[in-house]
Image 1 (cartoon, one colour):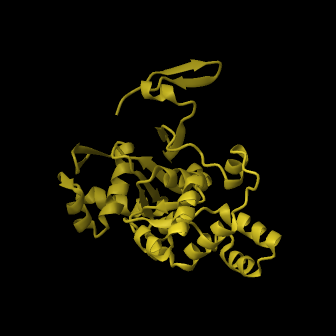
Image 2 (cartoon, helix red, strand yellow):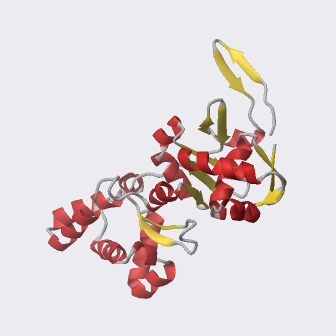
Image 3 (cartoon, helix red, strand yellow):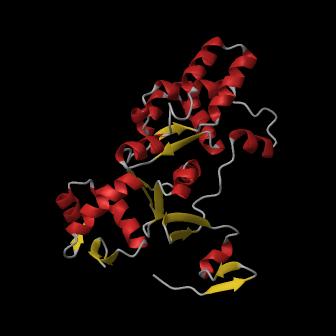
Length: 269
């Protein structure tokens, strides 16, 4: 933890940032709790929608091609948890694999990696569904339109995998920067209100916890830190998953309540 000088000019405050911020025109500011904030380099450039990317590249038709629609529907037909790269690859032909690679390069499909999906699973970008719907209407493809209408649900009824995990288990550890940026954008209002807090660890992972989970888990974790302990020991004492313990410890370290004395070993302050 380092102190920085506050400069006051014309009723505004300025803080001198480390030199690594010189390469960025923007920073990310997260509210951890009253009086505590997290400054971070942008995790990833904000993702453009497929329509914007296609327009910028000069593509005459921003919608997916029939071949792309077929591959997207094949992905939809596979249960989300079973969409591992190996399983998907085994279900596609050679030409279809080339189409899938093209969908990835456009950002229409990505491999989501999370605590529950350590090997990664294919995820279809939310803003692809309207394109599929429009394409189905333009071509009169009744079957395609039916499938898209079933898939295109309101965000609350069909949340993203990472959002669903966060709301069910109370914490999330994201290793992929693009997924972290997308979730951060989705949770803007929750982070402003303090209902959700997040920080980027020194290991490059992004740790997110809900206020309710943090409130419950932090008390148990601090009680378990009567003496220095590693994550596994704390997890066993608190009966909390080690990933959840690490996520809470990251927030406690940011607020100065604990310190990491050596790699993986924490102590209460």
